[in-house]
Amino acid sequence: MPSLKGWINATSRINQHLASTDKAHLTTVRVIVDETFNKSVCLDLESFLIRMLAGDGAYSVLNRNDGITESAYYDRDRYQETFEQVFDRLKDDGVFTRTIPEIENSDLFKLSPFKALTQDQAIAVEGILEGLFEDLETRASSTGTSTGTSTTVVQGEPGTGKTVVAIYLMKMLVDIQAAPPAEDFDRDTMFAEFFAGGYPQLLDGLRIGLVVPQQSLRKSIQKVFRKTPGLRADMVMTAFEAGESDEHFDLLLVDESHRLNQRANQASAAQNTKFRTITEKLFGHDDTSKTQLDWIRAKSTHQILFLDAAQSVRPADLPTHVLDDLVTGARQHERLYPLVSQLRVNAGADYVGYVRQLLGASTDHPLAAPLRPQTFDDYDFRLFDSLAEMQQQIRARDAEVGLSRLVAGYAWPWKTKNDKDAFDIEIDGIRLRWNSTQTDWIASPNALEEVGSIHTVQGYDLNYAGIIIGPDLSYDPARGTLIVNRDSYFDTKGKENNPRLGKTYADDNLLRFVSNIYAVLLTRGIKGTYVYVSDPALRAHLAQYIPTAALAPALTRSDEYFERSAPRFPQ
Image 1 (cartoon, rainbow, N blue to C red):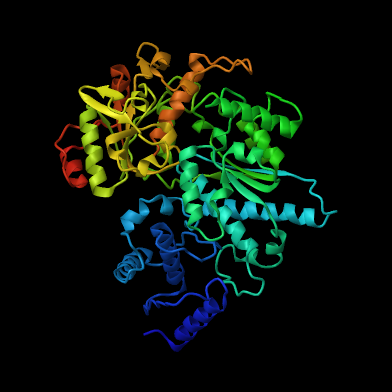
Image 2: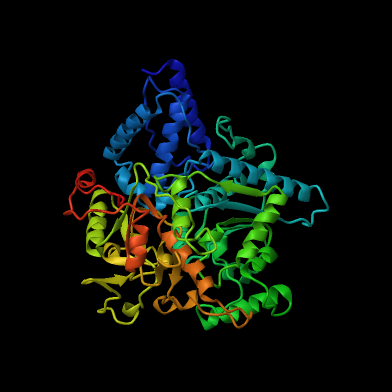
């Protein structure tokens, strides 16, 4: 039984909640009792339940974002088992509507503002907040007009949680902004100091927004914002919407900043017109050297840019030298925050570098040499000789853990865009179709039977990803280099020249984009990545570096399959 002091603390906390105007309507209280729980365990359980409730989506989570972080304490693994028992009891009581795996596979969970931060993410958030408040304080103590601007850069490879930090910051800023001055804050939370001491007043009236260039990811984040008190879907916008806005923003966060556009032929005539009119409105004339990054800077006093130059996948994306200059400038002004902890791929941070090196995405274009074969513990990384077998195994993994999909480079024309009865990809008797929707394809009903493109999966997690490397990428054994096959690459916007800026994209330029695409695709899988390669020479080459899968019948349990079909390197 809990001590008298424990009951008094619980009663006091309940009264605090009921005294809040935001929570006075609540009618039910559940008290979780365990005599072995110390304060560290209680905070960890609270963090776990908040994350699960936000991901389940049945209820709105009223908690503030004041510092949920992964904490280490004695016997934590044993307590985690107890947390699952608590969850099951609450689910039986109707508090949760889905299981833990179902919640963890959802966008509401993966893009939740209540994620627990890693140490480097927490350091980045704290540094960004300190810098922002310093800027705002300087502004408040001056004549009242904003004269200084700042640009902060958060840099990280795939899976380091750039999007998580962006969403976390958005929620924290609106929570600080709305913090009641007299409320008693838990001083043990990491960012509690920012909820008092004049910080909320510095955010009074602050206009903030989140720019997300990719359509699918933007729609998913908007869905999360609709479910989150304090956040609104219209806070999440395109670069065009930010540029067209009549209001000036105090702060704009830009996720996947490498996907902002320079002046180039847009996806529609209307967007080409918008690009010109926005530039004219902001700079007085149609300056073709201006990019969407210039719009962001013109429309906001402060910017926080999340980027990874190696994830640029189209010629219209910001040029590499612009991204390099951003990083250099942020470093000089001590506003650069690197994220290094690998949160997605269970193979660890070395896997991302290995894949990039393997595909030449981190070099000038030849395959990096010497590259020694690596294996990754607890990660299912394998090369298939048969697309049919890989498809079968992706289906088996989806039946086991969900969220397992086939994805591919844009190496086949999109016939089904106009003919729904056609097939897009045909290999060795296997016929497949491209994604039937551009928005939230991963969670769409037919996703398991379709193939996603880079534009449907960039920024997302999968449990298992089956990557089809198409005929757009091949290998020259004589020269030991990758080759891009322009005629087999069907993303028109991915290879067209830019006469407006006098830019012509040779095969070397195109190779960089195609290599980047496959490197992005190969870093989507949390538990495993399967690979099928169309070009025989490239397949033979990659077999030196990716364990090959022995053909075996599909089984319902992945551990049985591993025993009977163990990946192997050629001897």
